[in-house]
Length: 311
Image (cartoon, rainbow, N blue to C red):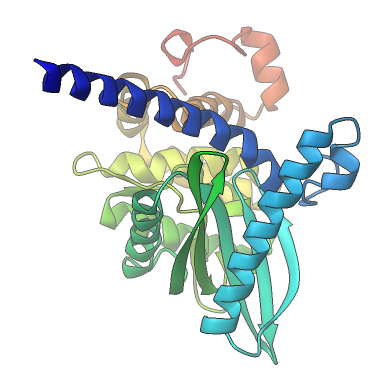
């Protein structure tokens, strides 16, 4: 009985520590995200922590740990490469490094454990194996502590790809081919916006494989859902290309896509992304602006099940 009681106490202590770890992880994320002021400008310990000394100290500590991990990885895996620039997004920092005419990207995030890093690395490698993600060169996990809480820095090093020229019809064809490849593999990207697509001379790829969703059935909805996101996210010329493809896919596919998002996707960011994409693509397919669609139908904050989504 004593052993059982001790086991229960240890379990409760573990659960408490895990809750503290998740809370601290969420707090630290802001230090490696964009500031929200200008483009992809990163969070600044000096300008963003002026009235909070603990924020400044913690920010400096986290960024020092990140920089040490990145520097060590470059020295061991990419000798002679120099950091050219860095860009911050919603979930981490992308370091662009250069040697001669060759560039590489180190995508860096803070995570909870080596297990999370391993799963993350496997996501990126799987996308690479299906020819819808960049070539992955290496990965590394650097543990660090914040008080009693153990966390880690996860690095994925990959080939550099340039941005797509959104008004170019050739790039639109590459992106459509990319979506076809994803559909064949049963892979639904969790946020297929233009910022997460890169183009090369012959093809396009997705980046941001922090999460991955694989569909074994109804693969045709993969193309529909990702195009719903892109048709809203793109400029007129390319948006019209996507619009025609969407219409040709047909009403049955759209109905299946709506049912999948409404009934099968768990609540969270991915569900919200595709709820918005389905609703807003309705506006584009009916030659309306998104704001006109929401204003006319008064649906901006209604759940997907209440939307009128027939075209």
